[in-house]
Image (tube, rainbow, N blue to C red; front, side, top):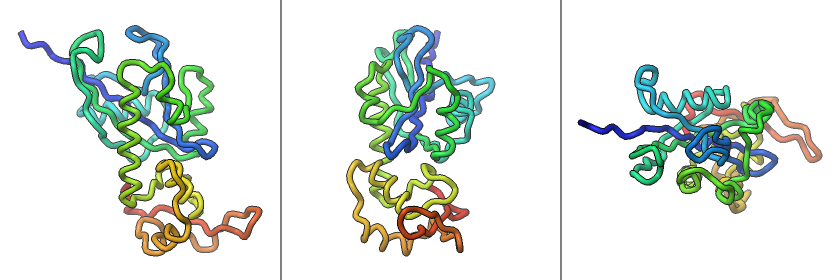
Length: 217
């Protein structure tokens, strides 16, 4: 008889909270690894999920109730020792939430879901191999930003160049040079200036931008 492995989709949901890059963790209610923190995830349900990508989208919808941007496959984890229930496959996804969406999630008032600073997340008592999963998803996100993809999904619908530069710095874990960043943004096709829209602040008003309609991270 054929033995089928357990198939899961786990999602590393990233957001910027108070100028720190955070990942969403959920406390496991059931065994195995009950009460430990883990990435939100779910088991593939062939009757309702047309694909594992759909499992990931269902997990995000059920756990956080919002549509995340840029849900992309990062890496497949597999083995017979990673889950006590048997041989398992787990596809890890990276997804991004804007500040507005992340506030909505924080407002769920559930002690079972929380945003944790990425550096601190791997120090928590995590279930299974989720520490490794977070590290892989972060590496994936950093790789995209290093290759000049602007992480617009982390920002609200309109944003300033400073906010975009700041998001890049927070993802990379080191400051992005302002002058070279501004030069690069002059030719950036994925953002559009919103005429007449400025953010008032302590300094001179900041011109606001939005994502181009065909933007893909």
